[in-house]
Amino acid sequence: MARKSIEKAILDAVSDIRLQALGFEAIGIWVFLMNLIREIGTDGSVTFGFGRAPSLADVARIRFGMSETELKTHLETHCKTQLLAWDDATQTLSYGPDQQPSRRTISNRLNGAKGGRPPKNRVTERTDPAQRNLPPMAIKGGKSVTECKTHAPIAKAKADNDSYHKAKLVEPSASEIDAVFNRIGPKAFDAAGFDPARDLQNWSAARQWAADGLRKGMTPEEIERVVVAEVSRIAERQRNKGKPAPHMGYFGKAICAAIAAGVIPEEPKTFAQQVAERDWEEAMREWVRAGGAGPQPVLADYAAKAAA
Image (cartoon, rainbow, N blue to C red; front, side):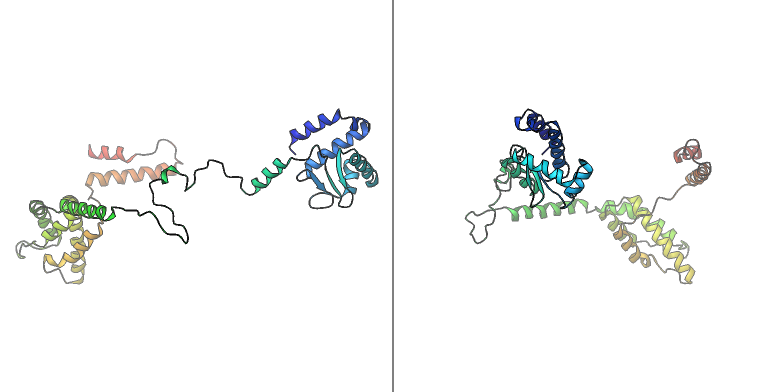
């Protein structure tokens, strides 16, 4: 029973002639017993010496300052007037019939323990209006009486057609390939370390690299960075081995793999950018040593200063 219900029951019972006939001392004991049920009881009753409830002797001594026999006498008296319910065999004290929870209250508690009753108009998979146009749910052991026709093959064909047109859109033209080829060819030749006076200036292999990069969606600048970086790396490795690359086609396999991976090197930094970053890093170290005192250095300020 909730606190408000107990208070209301006490106020109502104070004017009860059965309680008034017992005297003021009995009224006080009845109030304490009602509060005791609310404090350590469950569903309007408490069994002494069971669970968390102390024994009747301990309750009599601690709460009422009397012996167990005296407290039993009061319990039996209140039981006769039906102000409380007392079962000496099971040592169970309960609210009187007037204060017992109703059947509706008990039902609500049971349903609450199970998660509560579902709302009357709750939307489910069967009652949801959004499911109206969907095929019926399968029933175990039954047969489908509604044939659901879809247009999945048509939609798939359209999607394939769209992919085909997109593929045609990213296919580079001959003029675009030529422009990138003429840009990266000479730079790849120089990065390889070939001598224009002795080696044949043939960088025709770069045409394939240009076409692959454009199909990948790279810009001419990005293709150039990938090609120059790979050519420089491999040429340096071969020179260290004493076996320099014989021609531009030697780099083809590594460059095609780098373009397919899509890993684009960072854009080479100018001397001014390198100076700005060096000064900014030094300023950041000083700022950290000072415990972050003052404004934090900003790289853009040092870049503008170096560019000036």
